[in-house]
Amino acid sequence: MSKLYPLSFRPIFKEKVWGGNKLNTKFGLNLGSLSNCGEAWLLSALPGNHSLAATGWLKGNTLKELTEIYMDDLLGEKVYKSFGDTFPMLIKLLDTREWLSVQVHPDQKYTNCHNLSLPKSELWYVLDADPQSELFIGLNPGVDRDYFLSHLQADKLGMVLKKQKVTAGDVFYIPAGCIHALGPGIVLAEIQMASDDTFRIFDWDRQGSLASKRELHLEQALEVIDFSAPGAHQVIPRTDATSVISPSGSPFRVSVLHLTSSTFKNYEHLGSFVIYLCIGGSADIVSDAGCAKIQTGRCVLIPASLDEIQIIPVNEVRILEISMNESSVENSNL
Image (tube, rainbow, N blue to C red):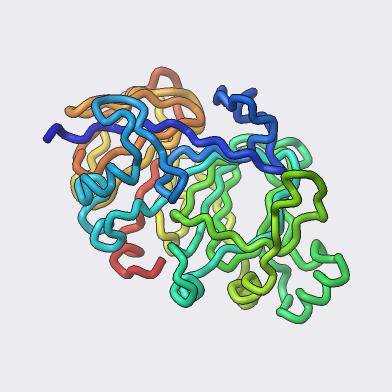
């Protein structure tokens, strides 16, 4: 069997009532006929949304098929032991022309009780933002269930949510159970666990053909909102070449690589696949089994069987380096 190599995939584009066209105008992605493209799924093995390999002798195979065939060679021994042939992550780009719904994602307890897939925590890296862009993230101090419901019923939900200004380079970590909503004028990279379970609480009373299909899930949301939590963690990247931007309790580990010259990376003892998501510039990813090109808004999957790769910048490049958090995999507390 031929050796696995750095894998590129074709994006899957999603029309959303709140979406725009910046993924085309700013990042060069071909959106086809979509006029409200809110999401580009760069790496997915979710049912009905299978990323297709775009290059090499595995071209045309889905990520799900590759995971089932190559198992721990693709995922890593510890990751495969925890997740089996389920690829555990989902990588997206988002473009918000309007407010997203106020929403929350299920935690481990809820997914266990209701036979859902994985609990959904996510990390946002802001790629572009309009001068007035903002978001809601977490609850204001002292907000309990009754206070929250009274403000929701009075159409004053914004008064109990934390509002945050947004600029390019900001990083936000949203654990399962944290209420949140993205505002207009934002393009970001979203790193999350492989789940599409979202409970909408409020959708801005939108009208139109796209909006009419969007139901609310208040009953489910109230089961998972963490009213005792201090809120989501905003993490600001440091300015050195390699910066870890995900909190220690995250199920995944995300670092920023800022490179101007050729760099070797050794993953022999990592025990996980690695995803490179380019957030600026371009580079060649080279290994003894093959190579891949990466540029802004694209990602490359490094199989766990590849111990060493070389990143050769074509120009100054910034890359998000993403892998499973070893401690979270070992504890199976995702």
